[in-house]
Amino acid sequence: MTSSPGVSLPPGITLDGTLGALLICTIIAVALFGVICLQTYQYFNYYVKDPLYMKILVAIIWCLEFVHTVVIVHALYRIVVTDFGVPSFLADEPATLKTSILFSGFINTGVQGFFAYRIKVVSKRWTMPIICWSLLAVRLTCVIASSIIVLRVKIPEFASHYKWLLTLLLVATAIGDLVVAGALAYFLSQGRSGFLKTDHVVNELILFSIETGLVTSLVAMAVLIIFLTKPTTFAWIGMLLTLAKIYTNSLLLSLNNRKHLRSEFVGYNDSRRSELQPHKARGIALEMNSMTATFSSPLEHKNDNRFMEDNGERGAI
Image (cartoon, rainbow, N blue to C red):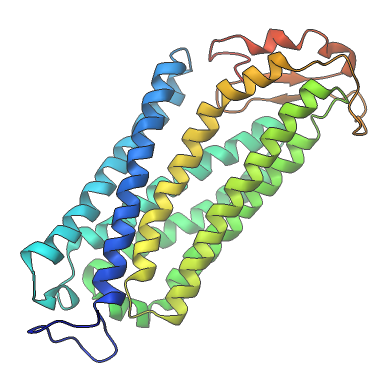
């Protein structure tokens, strides 16, 4: 469907590329918010002893997601119901649609800021976290600037005159995600002890870090490609709306995955050495979220189950 009777669209603009793209992405975003609600419930149900700051972080992110979902649904409602049959949304886009960019930026920055903090905890160094936080600062600055500008001008005008700003935002997002994922994977790999039990858990954490970093980076690059090739469509806006949901789900999945890792850790036979070359006996503290698993000398891993207590304060991998 490219047009409908009584609806006059500017040349080169189609309902498929505007309303259709926004509708599909909004449905996906709402579905992902449902998953977020389920994961949030599981988190507060399973990890009641997690530190207060972790609970506050999850609560704030959920509240931002709730508002983010409300504003994009309101924008869609106005377009398909209030302005039904009249493409006025092209001349007067809903303010809530533009506001969603700001909430999305806050969510993305908060989640990646936390993952950058994990790098500091794992590595005991400040260099990589500072680099990641610097990229996040660039991203947040671009988000705030974009939100202010897009509220004053029309989206097509923004896409035409401020293309460099959104490009910088998406490039910083993709690079930041890859840097965070790569740094986490590298420093986690230093925790391999040579014993199957601990190495298996570390490998699981490395794989998860790489997968989440790649997914968010690929989505950011996809948004950038669509924005540069088809700036007059709403497809890039719709995909930008779903990106925040992917970030939040990755955060909650990393928190709730501790229960699964704990069961694998306890059930694994650690009496054999791993085929991987063990590192020299250097200690590394892996404090992922509220969990602390100290991987030191291989000889210290015989009683690794002490790190698998069911409380969120220590050892709940």
